[in-house]
Length: 340
Image 1 (tube, rainbow, N blue to C red):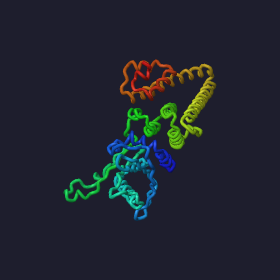
Image 2: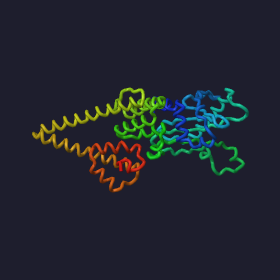
Image 3: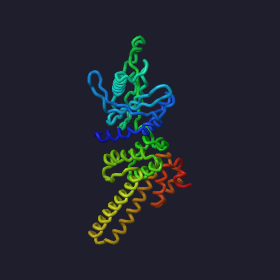
Image 4: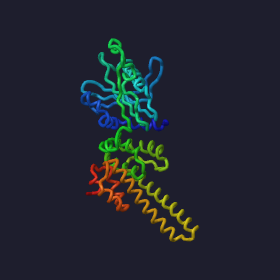
């Protein structure tokens, strides 16, 4: 991924509220360290130099106060699409450099180092299969006299593709929202989810602003550049921009289809009949396509569908399909989708 992807994620994790959402929703390991005081979340400089002058300045480091000490969260945001089998080696090196920097800066009190929780936030499409513990990269059949001297350290892996849509939908969480946004295939679904996020985080200007920037800088400009959505300053404005853009987009598609139908009808000498048949066919095909797509969404969310649901989908109007699709994002049962 390019530098703009890198910057968009670093901007996302530059907010203490987003970091809090990550800890609460995706880092159960942090709960074992005692109560975390999120009011003390503090970003730490990630620019430090090792003894051989290799600089590390591209990672994200936060610290938060626990019951007894500071906990350092070392985020390594992995943007490559391929899995790094030596990630555990990289992280044990980076954590060592962080400790060295803390010692040199006289930020260590007493004779004990603060705990560091290494986190790899992986955004690639291929599922992560590299060892998360450096011990897995070392020989397993060594005698105890030697094995006790080997290094020990593991990291927390957050693999976007490891979370189901159902699990993410149950989290009103900024990090979960970014993963769900990337999975939306239809522009209409993207608009509905953006509108839902605006309702969830209404009143929190910081989260709305950060999500708006991330959606525009990463999702729309890089993943969906064809949408060409104007700049917006919060989720409310972005929701309106998306709705307006999709309306214009549908009008353009309909106009092109109409022009094509007129040309074909004129060539065959049956303009009126051809146009009427084409419009009716497009309407029927559109309804069938929308019903099939909604059926896939429901099956993915709730499992195999009963016959009464399939019957309603087959006989539904366009307005009904749109209403039901809006409800899929928040519904917890099939009956809630259909208003039963």
